[in-house]
Amino acid sequence: MTSDYDLIVVGGGPAGSTAATAVALRGHRVLLLERETFPRYQIGESLLPATVHGLCRILGVADEVAEAGFTLKRGGTLRWGRAPEPWQFSFAMTPRLPEPTATAYQVERSRFDEILLRNAERVGVEVREGSPVRRVLTEGERVHGVEYTDRDGTTRTAHARYVIDASGNTSRLHGKVGGARVYSDFFRNLAVFGYYAGGRRLPEPNSGNIFCAAFDAGWLWYIPLRDDLTSVGAVISPKHYAAVQHDPRAAWQDMIKACPEVARLLTDVPVATEKPYDQVRVRKDYSYWKTSLWTPGMALVGDAACFVDPVLSSGVHLATYGALLAARAVNSALDGSVPEERGFAEFEARYRREYGVFYDFLIAFYDMERNEDSYFWAAKKVTEVDIDEVAAFAELAGGVASGDEAVGATGRLGTYWSAAAAELDAAVDHLTAPDEPRTNPLLTTEVVTNTFRTGNALQEQALYGGPLDAPASPAPDALTVTEDGLSWVV
Image (cartoon, rainbow, N blue to C red; front, side, top):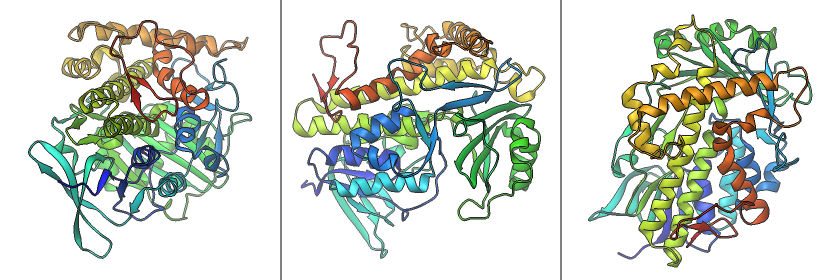
């Protein structure tokens, strides 16, 4: 069939804008369909340096993001683990990524997402808002387009060589890519969140840090978005769902009162009445992955593909990194430099690995919290990870993320996670020692090094045209990345 476009992207959030921009930058014809009209509300406000200084620079939007006035984030502050007082880590405590690239931002997603979407328009993407996609079109086994409804209610079709589904966790299209969503039992939590019209800030230079505090029922995030706006959310067990469903606002404020470290920052501070921050919202059962991420003609990215617990602020990074990987596969297939199957296999392998290292880290990180009497934390121990989930994860990551080369050796994953938790525990002890370390002891741990390796490489790609360290012994058919970060090369 004749294609109207080289690529159709469904969804205009960070993942969709990233994929669309990265393909349009190569001169290809791209259509982006978004069901809402921007700006629109979205949760996920705390970014990592890899997004700010890696991905945004590759897309050509780094300066605009830097000038937007978002709150500067130097790292994180946590009341977590055995340490009785909050402790902090700094992104700058590594010689590889010095200031100013070792920072990130706390962002109002309505503004950040619109910056990315308008940038996509500037580089040539045809953006149609108010245009929900109804279904994908197939011919044989191949996806070749979509059917959508435009602003005036007319049903239309558009054809393309490739379709990328970036329509989020509520995607109605992901089923077209084979395989099921696998929901994590270990991370099967509930999040209830809202906003305050201000709030006290941590002491300088950490006033812009995200603050995460563990308490009996789970943990709270506290994100300073503006002087007069703070995002506060509770991550708790699904056993609280009835109370949350009955009165979300009361349940949310009860959780805040139960966590003294956060409650004292909000004493006498009113809740936000500014729209859209006047609502209390709920998300449940949000940690999952798809067993397949692509099929001929179509790929899944962002929350349509996977999501994992938000304690490490990995959501936007995983979404945009996965979208960049998919765009590389599309670009390479369109210009004929790498066969489609090879390029998308690389997309899927790297995307799974990145999800896997964050999953690895988070299991070890949860195991650090020593609140043994809490129902929530008693269920968040490595020993409580269901064997079926361990097996599913081993299949997902192929042993790469956990350092275990044998895919089927699921019995050793528990040992690895326990050892990683102990190593994290020791590093935090060192971090909070009276003599402050000159380098971040967390960076000496295997699980942290694995987690941030790809993000560091993405920043190095954006800053220097490639990673500073080449792989020790690349496979003969290994794919690498072009200097602009937009395609695979053999």
